[in-house]
Length: 99
Image 1 (cartoon, rainbow, N blue to C red):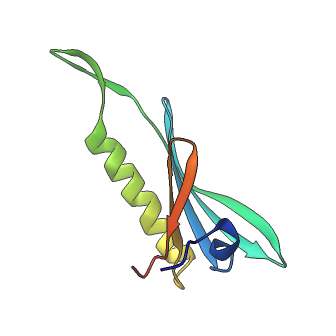
Image 2 (image 1 turned 90 degrees about the horizontal axis):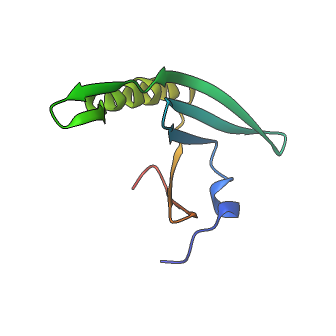
């Protein structure tokens, strides 16, 4: 299989980005209109820590539920499908949504 690049990715009609920040979670939808990117914030939620016996921790169940809510909203806004990205070690990787 040939290597995919960001140039290959922009041929897709939509890209979903999930940002898990220290204080909030954001799900955004990027679409291309006339060759220019258009970014729409689809869902945002606060990441509030929870107190456990071991100290303050992120509430991963709540974060997961919020990301799922954002992804569901993206599915409504981009029914034609999207491309998924992930960032690891400052490198951007992607795979087609149909795989």
